[in-house]
Length: 620
Ligand SMILES: Nc1ncnc2c1ncn2[C@@H]1O[C@H](COP(=O)(O)OP(=O)(O)O)[C@@H](O)[C@H]1O
Ligand SMILES: [Mg+2]
Image (tube, rainbow, N blue to C red; front, side, top):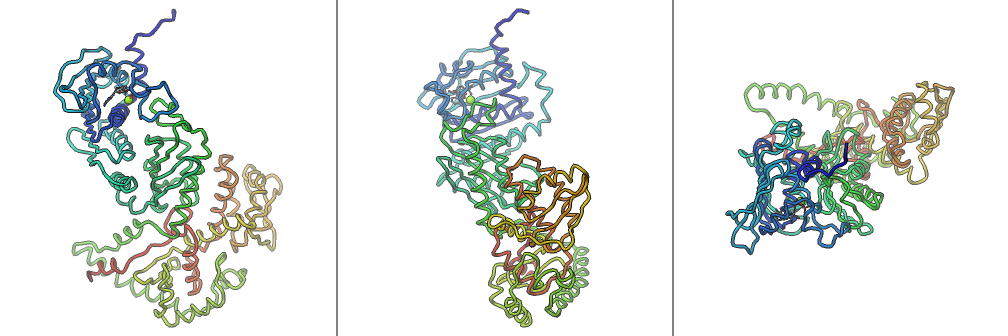
């Protein structure tokens, strides 16, 4: 077959295959054009999911009839005045969107520059160019796209339901709106207004938080930590959510590079790295992060829809995101998200209706005395060390493994508890004074203005983990020799994985070596763990190592493994704690960064304010 030049319309249809993959992609191109035109208000309307109509109206700079003709021509753009692909400051630059859309749909662009007396309209239908006609339109531009993909019916078949297509378009406009809080946006599906955002004026951080809170919800605004960091000319701003506010997918991670929304693997990876200590792998934080860097440091011309970018120094960007986010999270200390206590309060709230009322009353009657009895038992229990008794006295001084309970503190808190509620000093601490342990699992403490309920397993796991990481960073994790080395049998591959990593594991305080093909022998374990189920620990570690593979740097791998170790070394739910152990746990949580959530992102405690409790009982 002879080689031939393809006709213009076909070329444009091919380009459209990449540039307008679905209605949301057309919306993105048109809204970006409006933003590049300096619009203050942008209105988007979709009908039938964008199949029947996509209309984008702006109040930007507009076009003359001559410019209209050029605008729909392929590779015609006003955005590269110096043939310079390096210093791109606009969202568009390829001059492809309008001709591509015109090749696969019926496109009408109506426009009027600010200084012009009249507006002009130009139509392109399936690649056939019309002529500019006088029209009525205020300053700005209106682009109407009708019958999308009528000229390429194969594409039509790939479209999903109108609802799905609209929700993609909504997500697209949301993302652009986050990056441009000074611009007002509306989006309607022809019947309902799905987005309505007024242009915001004021200081950037303030207007941005307002916009983010409108789009991501009040929960995010209330539980987000501000980020403002800079390294070698790269600036990172925005917000990262507390780990306890998390979701099942990464949909709510909004990332921007020089004002451009991106879905970049490197950036998502950096966020995963920043939160890896605080969240299970299947939970995802909420973030909105804005990277600003000199245009020559980033190539935006690597993806047809410009959704991905290439950084000149990816390590620098990644490092900045990881360290700035971690720093912000550490500053937040033991804070857990407000949604946790709100959910708790919601659960307490009496339901209306006589049946529910009866049920609650019945429940309260039986459970209240039981709770009190348990509390009393805890107070009354002699303050000897139950840990030592239950676990064979391995722990010197009878402390929880990994916790400091100095004898003086023990005596002091014993007296204090004997005096019952009279302990103003402890109550002044953020997590208050321990008053009871309920169901062998929850420590209940009284604070100056509320009640704190701690999940002892989750909290202790976090403390052990943080302590291990700290030891790891300092002198290496302290080890404790097993009286009898323990042989653990495993699958051959699992045993090999453990043996291969014995050097790393030793750094973590675990001394282990190969023992024949399908077994390892464990000689020493991290002292922080106390008495552990060695076989269970080794099996979990083998799984963990299989999953991590070679993907992560040594340091990150060690931190992952710390998490597995900590979980094994933690006080199990169901273990009785005495008063000084409970108070030691609370004091240590206050002193430990990140103690508001366990390694899996679950909260370690909830706080109920007296004011809210009073509301529950109708006292306020
Ligand atoms: N809403 C608009 N307001 C003003 N000018 C516009 C608008 N949309 C498009 N244009 C003009 O048409 C040109 C071509 O647009 P487009 O095909 O999207 O390519 P690009 O945005 O890459 O330049 C733009 O460079 C711009 O000059
Ligand atoms: Mg464009």
